[in-house]
Amino acid sequence: MNYEQCLRYLEKIQNLGIKFGLDNVRTILYAFDNPHLKYPSVLVAGTNGKGSVCAMLTQILTLHGFSAGLFTSPHLVRVEERIRIGKRKIARRSFCKLLTALRAKIEELIVSRKLLSPPTYFEMLTCLAFLFFKEQKVDMAFLEIGMGGRFDATNVVEPSVSVITTISAEHQKFLGDSLSQIAFEKAGIVKPGVPVICGVEVEEAYKTIKKRAKELEAPFFGVFARKSCFKKQKTGKGYVFEYNSGREKYSYRPSLPGEHQGKNAAVAIACALQLSNNWKKLEKEKIILGIETTRWGGRLEVISRRPLVLLDGAHNEEGARALEKYAREFVPAPVILVYAAMRDKKIEKIADILFPLAEKVILTRFPYFRAEEPDEMRERLQGFKDRIVCEPDARKAFEMAIQSAGARSSILITGSLFLVGEIKKLKTKCRKP
Image (tube, rainbow, N blue to C red):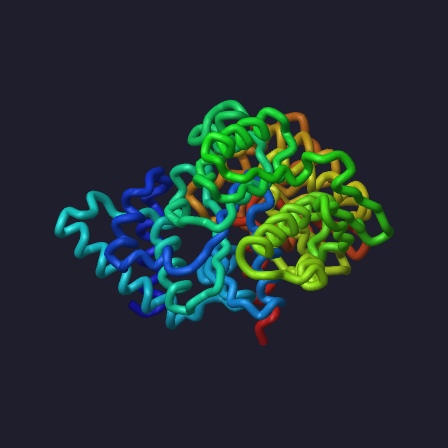
């Protein structure tokens, strides 16, 4: 298949939606001689911060001269963004070659009834990442869990370290209604004897994960369990943080803005220290440099200064609170908010957090079958109707925000990484000659 054929094929299977279970992935990978077991890996689960932590760890290992594979989701502009070696995305040629091989093998497995149903979009890309990392002979792979953990397609590996970043209420239809149920699903990545790095601070969820680690005799490290292990100092341009590992203090200013990224960095440092003990020796200076030089799109990403335009993928209450805190401290008023979301998100609660920041809210959508319609959102948000404008076309919504802002207002574009991706596509087109 050429690149366009690959995209059409993936678009077709995307309609299969979400399917939990590991049988499909294991069957496919077994047919390729289990490429996911040919190199060490780290699994990273959690409600928020997974991608940022994976990106930081990848940068840390890259600075040490190691080949670090990175698998994340979703992508912003191109599907190849999900699969990287360091900062380098998988080349289209490799992407197409591996996807073509996967498709042929899957069709063969279905005909022989070794595979009873076709893999989902996420399962397919997970398998492709594993094949690519084996082909590239990576020293380590960092794998972001797609949803939950226990039945996520990535959870077929035998990790060197398991990381859980944060726990809050999300995907309750699939993961359970209580924080302890959600934590149990995410703790499904905990393996017997494998160290667990836990950045969770909510007591109910923390206890659930710690209990599971104890049951499996997995060494457990609560990143924020000790008093005064994490400190912050606000400056005019952001924060300086200090993380005390118990043996050493790490002072750092993350390249990714926001207090929440300081905590994500502490989780990444704790994981790096575990890898340094059990895998390869990592240097303190390069760990800090990795934290301070990581680039990760769509997380308080500035794409314009006049007017100030920030993109952030906040799609749940926890992410919205982090964005709201940052905006009140560092984003000049007045604010224009461009917002879109999946229909299954807690839009009312997110609006209660974010919409008071803005003098004007432009509701829009992105081209995805689960996206909520702007008019439907407006009906759900009667308390903010006086400041809401609907514009279903994301391009026109962005143009409307720019025209309304002038040079002094700030623009926040948020609600989904899918919306962030649409705006980044527009900016990319604008830069072309």
